[in-house]
Structures are given as C-alpha cells and as structure tokens.
Image (tube, rainbow, N blue to C red; front, side, top):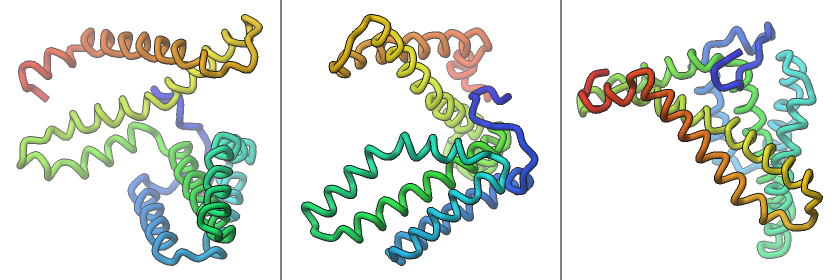
Length: 208
C-alpha cells in the first residue's frame, strides 16, 4: 500500500507501462480532444476509458465511483450549455470529454506507484537546478499535494458521519466548519511529522 493510499496493487497491462509514457499519452490525448472539439471523439474516449478499468484489472466499480463524484459538475456543465449557449450537443461533448479524461487520469494514478510518479517529476525538474530550484523539494511538494486528496475525502467523510449521527438533515453548510477543522488538524500532524524527520531543519539550512 502506498503512503497516500492511491495506488492499487495489480498486474494488468496498464501496470507494466512506465509513468512517463502514460502521462505523456494522457497529455497528447487531452490536447487532441480540445483541439478537435468533436462529439464522437469525446464519446469514444469516454467509452474506452470505461473499458480500460476492467481490462487493466481495476474493476468497473472504481470507474463508477469517479462518475458518481463527477456527476454534479457534469450536470451543471450540461445545463449551462443547454440554457445559456443553446447547444446541448456541445454540453454532451464537454461532459464526455471531461469524464473521459478524469477517468483516464484516475486509472493512471491507481496503476502507478507514488514513488515512481514522484521520481518522474523529480527527473523532469532537474534542469531547473540551474535557476535555484531543488528537485527534491519539488517532489516533496507533489507528494504533499497528492496526500491532500485522500485527506480531504477522509475529512469530508468524518464530518458527514458526525452530521448524520447528530440527526441533522437539510443543512449541508454545517459540514464546512468540521471539514476545515479536520483538515487543519491533519495539516498540523503532517507538519509535525516533517519536522520530526528533519525536513524543517533542511529547509532552514538549505541542504537537500
């Protein structure tokens, strides 16, 4: 299990592809979809993204979980396009394009070890040493950014459980403060862990 809880162990074909080619392919596909702006290309991408999960050994349920999280945003995009732009087909294209790319990005995250991903970003940022950028610091920032994803999900889940346990209904705004407090506590714990490992001292002295 990875330190951030995102990587899912498996042996599918997607696992055998290095992080660099996977991210590069995703980048190229995203550029092509945006430039082409074609409805059928977007729908084909969404279909292939859904098909990729069982083929890669990740399971359809993980793909459906991503779509469940996305549907409010997709609905808002579709409604906006239909009401204010007058192009429902454009709304369908944008929704399919966004859902397909997010599904593919999530599949890459699930099938790539965090250590490998951070190593890639560290190698990419090495040329920036000449302008004073520390690749190790870049990797650390990315690690903390990735770590924040499950942290937010955990904080939201804990706040929602407490909300339901108190018998509250119909006032979702009450979740905001508990979520923020939970995240602040997690951030404080992360900071203490970094200090305990000497990261803070390294930052003050300028050592990598």
